[in-house]
Image (tube, rainbow, N blue to C red; front, side, top):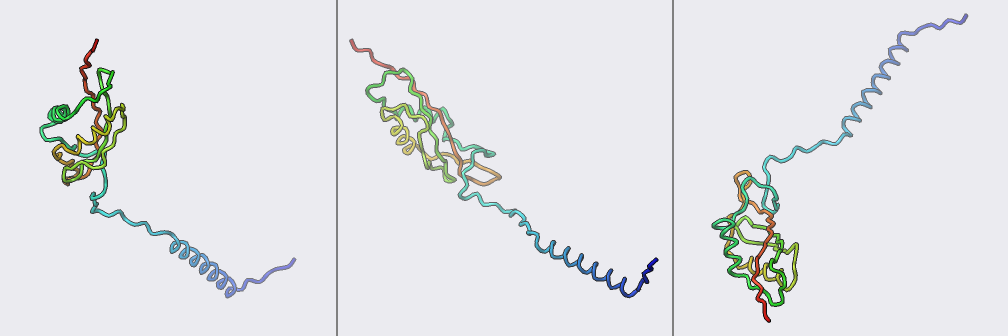
Length: 154
């Protein structure tokens, strides 16, 4: 039977070498991990357009006043055969209350979409939306239905 003689210096050197390798590998792994940035606590809402806000933008006098002002400026185009004109318009109310980027989502034709945009541009400034105590830009979508009297000519 062959017996092996244990050398305490050799064992200590082996343990020291193995420990050093494991520590070096562990440190290299920790250093290689990405450091995650903490999100900034001060948020800037200057260019962001909000869809959901704490306080929505509002037309001066409310939506009834908006409807009355809109209808008073609307001119029924010739050639309309429907008694109800339906359109959907979307726009951004800026932090100063002005209208920006108005577009017609549903255009019934006959130039109504263009007329709706022109009317929106001539209306007074809105009260802007508020989010976390600051006036912000907000997106607004409004369905507009207008009852039209159609003259029956014989």
